[in-house]
Length: 445
Image (cartoon, rainbow, N blue to C red; front, side):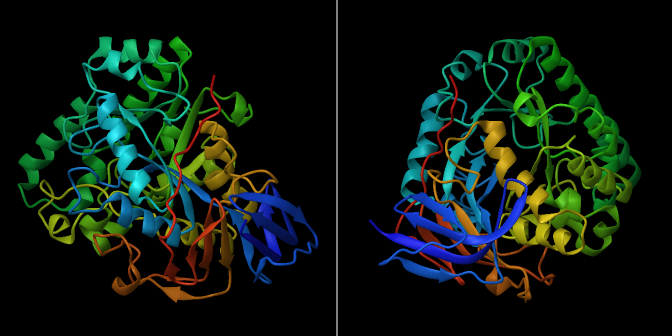
């Protein structure tokens, strides 16, 4: 059995930082101690570096099947492991959408052949597939995704009876994209009439407004409270929404949770002039006040998880005028180092960052033996050098689309190694695709 001994690491785990060694045997963490001896092991000297549990990204769009000119599971999982993301949960808005158990299983089969990272895929909800949704195996599927706002394609679920049925009958986690469609349609018509087809993207947060987000999010929270549903609201983008969530109870006991995305923490509406369509996301990047309150909510536990909503489009697609340019962008390769900049700036502690990017997704989704540095757990680990400067360029972007809103950004931290279930998948700039990741399993009754 292959073994690796990581020595002299600053181990960040469960609200502590301590120097020590970690022994990996096969897929698992065999031992954690101050000093470990292990003859025959591959030695990795981690002196001066942080050893973190692998990042678990609970919201990505890897575009396969049907949209693979933008990205696919192989290319985007490569970007993931280069960024220290060891597990991902991917959304159903592929082509065709994952509206049946067979279509969902088809995606798992692709990932089994091609994903370098561990993987799970959400079942998709439509206005007429409730019985199919209820067949979902909760032990090996992360959850159900509902688009309560037609962010992408025809996935809008807006029938009140359907929503009542889903919230009252689905027995596990429901993840929602919350924007109110009637408000967005009204705003779109008004701004199109005022500015025409060549409207500036700077008006995106007025079209996909705080009002649209709050009305939909508050409706979802009310539904969940009424039916006792386990609800997870994705990509919170406004200050007002953050006050929908409770920080008075531990995550294990929460029924209603929330996610913040890196782009809503990093950018605000002042960045549209510089980056234009490259930061057009749904929900929209909003004001600096919204940005600051999202971070505050993350720190005081109203918001539980940090993710990316990694959603690549080609540059030619992004070059379209506002009403034709798609929303979304690639982030998964840079999410960890972006948050390490926040650590460097003392906006968040490294312990809290690890909690939000690794521990909490594992707790929230009840993932089996991942998300922590613990003996007997899978060795999903990331070694980060906190003092190695580098710059994002087209040449080092691994997402298939070949661009990033971080292009030109200098980061002060760098991912050195990424282990996936004990396999060294990323080593100092080189990817080893000799072993694929594994399907995530969930500890649910």
